[in-house]
Length: 190
Image (cartoon, rainbow, N blue to C red; front, side):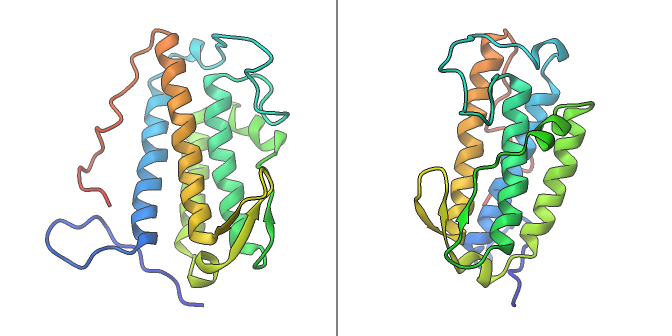
């Protein structure tokens, strides 16, 4: 199976990057920026719950929404989904990212270091993707929607971005200055 080449961000006129190359760049930056935000969060705010109502749950996957649990959720979801999409047959259903043990592991000890290690492993799996993974058709168990492999990767990016918005709100409610999202380094994107 041919693998999709991944290049560093371009500095001058060159061929346009492929959709997958753009995805890899934007996904890596999104996760990296999220880790930087969590790193700046005071330890006493990681388990803080600003509003505790029955609506502040994500089903049985996250029953207590905190900054740490949201961060762990997006890291675990990406980690599991990327592997499932790689190995599943065409037409399969991608399950919800439910893994209480992995969530607990991600929230124990140095959360950011664990997340960075898991993200590096996720990026390594992604770099091994080829047309077979990107072109397959999958369904998502959460709502039965149908996606191409590439489309599902973009939905994973959107899932992470959605929860980064949640994290931004939580940080501001905790009186923590949320970083500027558009402060990427390097400035060249996809």
